[in-house]
Image (cartoon, rainbow, N blue to C red; front, top):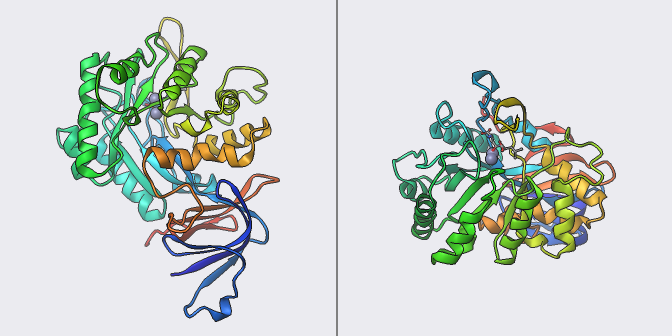
Length: 386
Ligand SMILES: CC(C)C[C@H](NC(=O)C[C@H](N)C(=O)O)C(=O)O
Ligand SMILES: [Zn+2]
Ligand SMILES: [Zn+2]
């Protein structure tokens, strides 16, 4: 079905002005207002009445089946709800397992990704979880990537963390090497998403991989890189070597007045000021746990990550003075580049994933995913065939 969103101010991310957009699953036309009476085919028209339109947001690290468990069974966190994604303008997620690769399964992760896809958003998954050797579908990371369409890499593999499997460098090198070759065989991006803990070795393993093997840096994708200042400094070095780092978005309830404290929002402002914004993404860790431990490693409690932290962080970054079209990149063109997706841009031939937003209130009213309205004027419309 060909559709059109008319009379909308487009950030592609760069600002294009007021445009009409014609699309089916892909964008067919972005341009000056057109007279639909002369079109030789039926078209459904949505008038955005001068609101803004941005590319659908990409959240590259979401525990879509839930995660947690670091405080025992009662702390296992709930799975992701489709409408929560859509209300926050997220049209693409990459699902992962975390600490708990025992009661959480890859089969369930796959089923949830297919379910969310049927409801209307775009989904991919990582094979593996925190631990090495990685849990797999087929017994092989390479077979998982080559043979299971939704699998685009391995993650989140924990390093420098008291909850990791304390992997050796050789074990990590093998996982990255397998992922690279599987990516070549399958034409997939082949990303290893590293969960980086607060341990003093930080991303040393990643620098050693770059320095001592032939493996290109673009397969390495460390997350939680704004966990502390030391790790963030390593992240800036990683960017200087051509890598991309992922920061966990600031959860809405965190630090309501984070004036000068160290956090993701201030890290992004610093990256922008260092002209490195093209090499950073944010992710929500949605439905994952955000646990707290005391200095002896005793569990103190946990909260649950929310996909709403993505638009919340973008809003706070803009409020700190980063231009909107630059801030947008960290959740559109940048993750799309990491995963080699035809997404994250409002341009002919790209996937028709859009968010219509009122930039005064940051209220998201309408969302299109793969050319279908999954939310219209505030009403979520999952494509469930009940
Ligand atoms: C970045 C910090 C705040 C949260 C981060 N969350 C996870 O890694 C996911 C979690 N362990 C799960 O399996 O659900 C952490 O625990 O370090
Ligand atoms: Zn993690
Ligand atoms: Zn996580």
